[in-house]
Image (tube, rainbow, N blue to C red; front, side):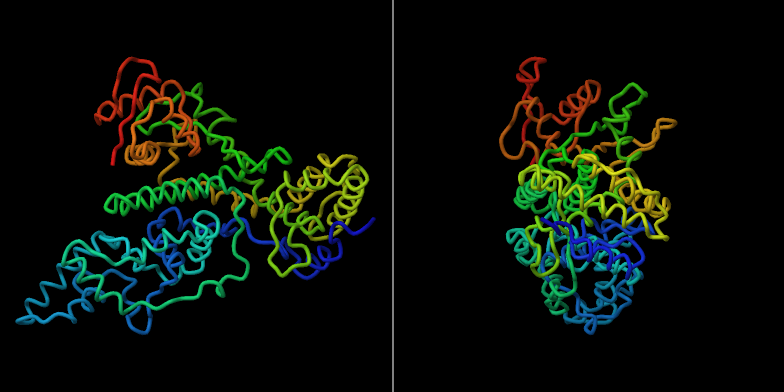
Length: 474
């Protein structure tokens, strides 16, 4: 028995690239090691690129000036384009109409998406095209996975008022179909399908409430993207015990609460500290798995690229299922690869002792890849998690540092998608929140009860969680 791991390909890859590369397997995350932080500050603009990935629509640059990307009062190209399709009595009326559309569509330098179709027209600066394109492709591949119902929702142009219909009708001629399939070489592999299914379930519910959807869509997408990365890191840190099909709820606290180090949200294993202290492991984990995934047990082995990334759990289960002799052979080959990997002068890693078990081997290769990765690269790559959550879901609390944070609008959104159309017991709401990655300790649960009560959406039969019911919000 020989050749389970494609040792020769991995060696050739390192010889040619002289850096860590995922090779034949798909990408896992769209993170960059340059850490430009644009996702943190401009997530709402990336949403436009995301929707264009969903619908396959793009703005025809030949039909509209690039000045569109810069907001200028009274001189917006879209507003002038819409006005050009209407007959006015005089130039002053046309001028007033352009000013009105400017204010109506481009208030505070961001597009006012008065209709879901208009998400297709949210512009981005050219300098962010590559970065936002990667992230939008990631959201499409990993979270939405080309759901036809959501695609139809963003293509549908039906409007309930004349002004919205006027805007949509006159923007429609600026669109063209864009084949995204060819623009992405590899795409991104979904590893946490449970999260994807929950995201789609929540989105489909929100589409029944169009006006609220427009407000909630960027926020809930940001949450699921942030949650996905946190849950991915948590699973990877469990190695062969990381099943990738269970959500580990981290403890959050409301932004108006006072926090002490004794609170679970500040706990090193239960709160954001777990993510913060291990974020630098994300890059070496991904490249450890990309190396190990070049093996004969990969479902796409010898098929056309890209291949799937195998998790530690999948590798462990498939190798172990082949029996003791096969497992020993895999460990032997992995040890040989570890020795080869450590021999590269640009990696500069001391060769570790050979391992005897599969569990030890997985950890040994990870340690070598981590040691062979620039600490600066690993740190910057891991900090992308923080950038993704900083604007909405993290808050610095003095010497405690960052903790997971719940803002007022966001918790109401979570309650809306958790309760949906029928009232549920309060205890079930806690369970629904935990499914979405959010746990609350005793003090935060009291805050939530007070919040629900203040919004008159709590039926209180007694103080028991099973005797209190949360009513639908939407």
